[in-house]
Image 1 (cartoon, rainbow, N blue to C red):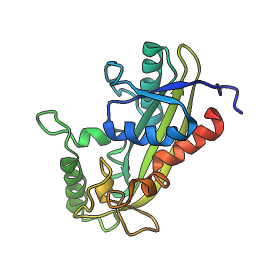
Image 2: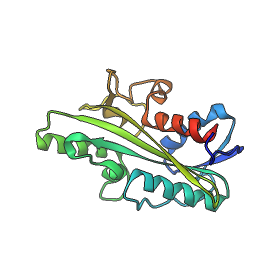
Image 3: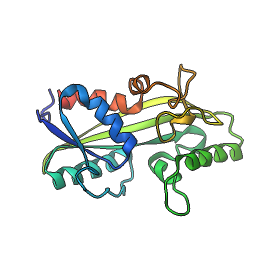
Length: 204
């Protein structure tokens, strides 16, 4: 057991993203830990001003842990497209923001496909990255990272999942994340791999 590991009965998911909250709740359910969310506690969303997934995940976890005085799990994740030099990366959510400031994932996926088509890219390989940060109130912070590699498709397929799931086919599979049953996706997602490391090193 890692020295920062600690037994606790509740945890706050430091996110206002409903899709992320549901996935993390599903992953935490077998641990019999009472899960709350930052939005459920009325805490404001934390601005992502970091220069990396790690920095953003830590910012969110620390802010929520200190505000709630409950251990908090922060998540920062995104899509990195090889032909776009790793973009959109930490700015994945911003690529889905329209002129009115509203987030629209269909718009975001169109942006990615448009840039790839404009470049004449034949290789649409990409990877999803997730960094989880576990912060204790006024205490230590630990992080884990998970990745899943695959290929982007256009037009998009499937109506499950969220974010860029409808255009991402993980390596070795034919279905997009949005076409898969949620239980199947959860066992191969970037968030699952990051969570598995967190569970092994810091939550057990």
